[in-house]
Amino acid sequence: MSADPVEHLTEAEAWCSGCSIPTRKREKKLEVCFTGTRASEKKDPASTAEEGNLNVVGSVTKNLGVLFRDPNTGLNTFGMSS
Image (tube, rainbow, N blue to C red; front, side):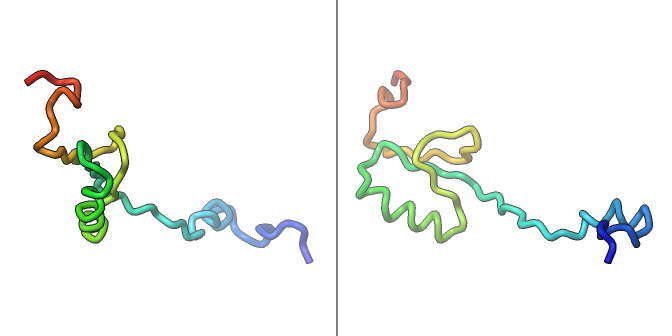
């Protein structure tokens, strides 16, 4: 048996041999964050979002798509003036 497993392949086949290795592509989901609410109040909306194939995160990230804010929370919480 040959020590080199690609010895019998043509040059084109050898270069492309790595192309056929299946890779698992990570599904890109929309990131959402619920803020300004107590943890117990986030549970239901977060569960609904996950069921809707959204990625729920606990803080603002560079990939965040939507930030849900409790309307009862003042703007000062977000470093904004009203």
